[in-house]
Image (cartoon, rainbow, N blue to C red; front, side, top):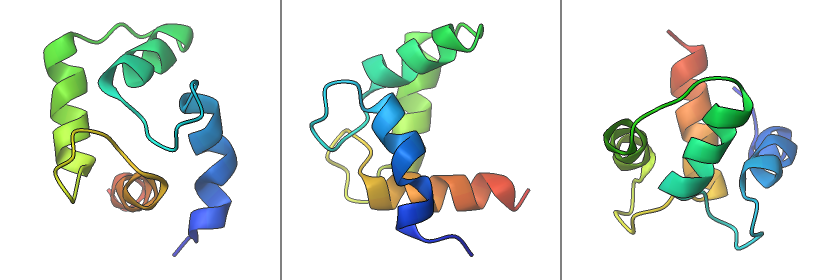
Length: 73
């Protein structure tokens, strides 16, 4: 199982504004940069799935848990 520190660099690349959270807009920007367009609805679905404390954004801890779930598929 990975630690939070192992995902920090990736998280920081996605967290463009540096506020410590990934928003739906930042997620959409990432996917666009990767050549994948996702809808606003899909971006919201991903954030909701990862957002354990229901604040509408993804923290580093929540991002780590999401990556661990995704890697375990």
